[in-house]
Image 1 (tube, protein in one colour):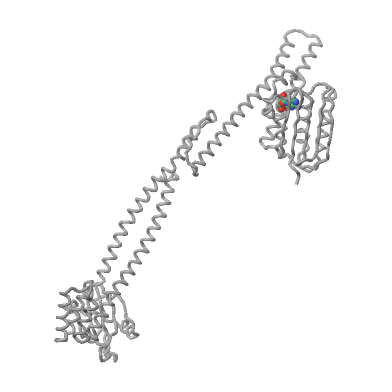
Image 2 (tube, protein in one colour):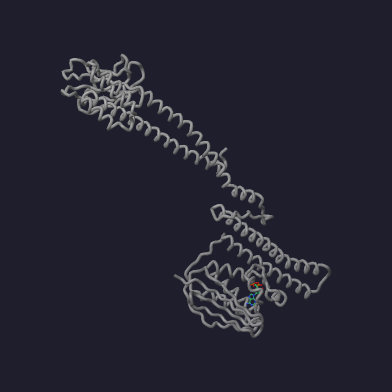
Length: 510
Ligand code: ADP
């Protein structure tokens, strides 16, 4: 089910969001719980202080009314003030504390139900705190009593208001604030104001329901949104997969449609297309290579077969047999050299043979190669001039370097006519530099870019020098590979009919 990356990402995304949402909901819930509790506590406390003011410090009738008019003018209507006047009138007439309490409470609290109760505080502790005399209680209490526990009593004596949640007889619990207050004669009382915790509970219940309802809805919306967004974002990847599935070694012409954006997917598409370009090129060159290789191998074999057939057709004299065998020998030598070159190239390309590098003096392999080709040059009447050969320390493989120099010298000899001159230099410029120039047939400009390709031979070297050269177009390919193995560079300049200059620049030894 979660096989695709986009579904897995959606899952991770939804899970992360869900955790965040859940943490947020929990924090919200507990913060709200504290806020609601504090708000209720504040309401109860302020109400209690107002009650205390009215009970125990009743100002003269006129001042009391003025105070109400002055302080509560914004919240009281004309009607309220008239009522207040009557209350004060009644209070002063009857001095009935319970009545005053009920009237004041109607105005002071805006939560319901509210219970208030005043007990006389006995310091001698004849009675337990719960049994201390109740001198007033709000009508809302009916015959119930707000409990006063030992613990609360002790904390009150420290002079601080006590906030608590208490169970009470009618069932449920009360949020309760208890205060220590004094009348004019300094007699202590416990004033307790409470409200049913049901109101708080129902607020928290509503919040709980809201959270339980909204969290899953949000989660589902985020998961769905995430799923569709991810699916869209991964569509180009699906396209790439489809294209890859249709690509075979037979048909590498397919490309992924460019995505048109430079984001990661855009880069992936470009990289993929470039990779297929490279693959197509190398498949093409492998095909060409094997085509060329089979052609080059087939030609001498055909010649050999032809010679044998001619020999077998009828009885020949010794001279004729000698000629035939000599042709066969020549062709097999050619075959062998092609096979050796191919084997050598494949060893370099596959890295199956590791060529050991060591410290040497560059002129040593060069002089070996020179001696190897001297006879051939002499036979052809070509002069080889060693113009400047410096002993240059270098890190390389002696056998490979000898082959490199030898291939270049042999080519120069091969493609130069009698009385031609070959000049060789080895010196230090921006690193060791080997240069060989000849006065031979040169290479046409249009052929220059291809002479390092395998099996490439300039047309006239095939026709003008078929037997003498015996090459298959692999010599310079090998040269280039050896130069690359030594981190060097090879370049060629040539003018047809005038001669060629090959230069190899090796990296400076550190
Ligand atoms: P080959 O075995 O045919 O010599 P190479 O790879 O050594 O193959 O050379 C490739 C082709 O480059 C040759 O066929 C020849 O046409 C040309 N070439 C190489 N070196 C020279 C040179 N010094 N002068 C003229 N042509 C050259």
